[in-house]
Image (cartoon, rainbow, N blue to C red; front, side, top):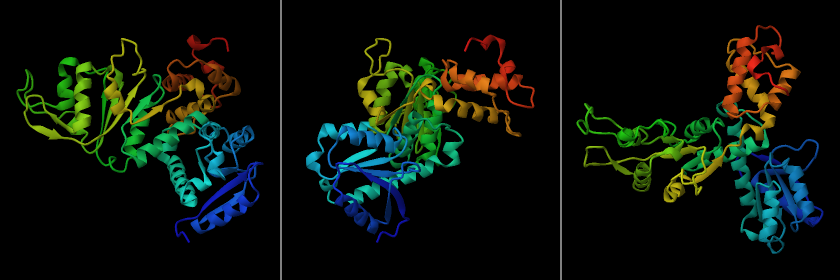
Length: 386
């Protein structure tokens, strides 16, 4: 009997699944300390299993319903690998399953299920910590998918991460979360470099550091980002703006974990986790991008795309209330009346979350209280039809 904490999950069987498989499943899971109950559509929550004989549209519909369009973890299990075609498995995965496999395709199917469930349980526990809940607000399916992925990659791997997304979507916040969740790196420094602000003439010193007298004005030796990030995390914001010469140099450092200070002939060793962010398509053929493909494949060990706020409608009011409370730390923040809520939900946010945060600040500045924020608190310049 497995002596680890028990796991409780729901399961359901598709119409084409043999009736006997239900008993087989329950009996097999019990020694692994996993208790399985039949799915209740009204109260289902947490991880679950969908069992089927062969992929079909009915099975995909069941997965969509059970996973709540991907917001809940669902492991889809085929009773026989003979019926689980490549295309069929992909259809089930795209319907919202977190993973798909055939019961008889692995030596220890219960071990596979237990490993997935315990990993998902650990990730969901991390998502409920104040670190995540207080800094990365949202419950929309698009946002939850991103959070689950980034939490898993940050905690369980040392992979370099490329975060993509429009301006103002929260790329730096996510990079800081990666550093904090990485148990190997979080006790050391997170070094942040904005590649749009790097002066080309000083870029070598910025990254590599320099020796005293290496150039005019170098009155003392100085550590660069590669030294400061050793043992920790290096975050390169807007990495698409990195000059071509620095791209080649960064590629070598990533590959060899060594570098030389400007003005020195001595090789230095460095070991850091690399997290990059960009609002560009680095693989575009656009001549304005000029990003090395070999470097792209080095920095994109895992790619995470942050959805724009227009794809996170369910999060707008949550974020607005969160920002309002940040601006009123010593009291309960005023809520937004229904008309203002409608305004917030229909407004265009060109600057995404940053734009929303600034708007909430302007509403709070004008609000005299008590009572909710009303239309009169909206600045005149922003009172358009809605």
